[in-house]
Length: 312
Image (cartoon, rainbow, N blue to C red; front, side, top):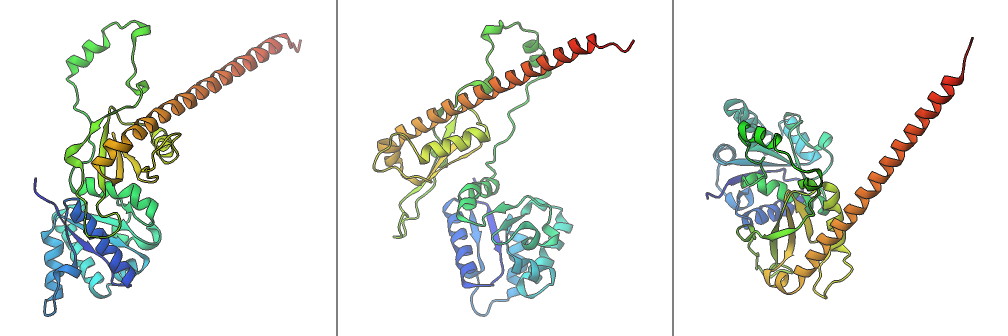
């Protein structure tokens, strides 16, 4: 599979932004995305306009790091950001490839940081550490074209046969009621460690496939159960678990740690989330039943008294 190429457009507004963008580009390259960054590509003597035009037109994607300063420069056509904005809007008009340009919210809000020509687009929120952890995979799965897609549509004839097949009531199974379980490790999607000598650089991301896509409620329960398990080892790390589609992900571990330490904690967190969700759903059903009985009681009371009232 060909590595997708992505050019990162941003405003040189501070050393902090430049460092953050370089970190993002480095992480993308670690995950198999050929991130292009001016800090790595440009040397003294290069023609800046030529570099910008080539970067926008020849890369598969353009990632636009949005901040209030970037929005101001883009809309007022100031400096390199303004020039890139002209190139990008022209590219959209010429090719109609809107998905090529992906806004990444770094600072501010969508209203004060995303340029008007990008308003309304699905953006990736990386404004803080929590959003970064939760949403970074949203960006990589898009760039790598590995986003979850709808299952294949069955032929009409098969659907009709299923609808007309009798299944005893006590034998019916709703897949949504099936407990979540981990099917296995997605070996091909395990990322590479950076191994650059920095703290934690030997760790990497490991995804696990679930038997089905869980609800958002289950996902929150699972993450909480992982962060605060009833039993855990000295190697347990809170804050590294997340969910995406039909996967749970440990971002910041090794396959050896999974085998020795994390496997049992993962199973416990899944079991805990299943049990907690089951209790929550039971409480919801009981509450709904109470409300139904109360409505019936209220309706019957009205009908009984209303039937006795006469204005003759």
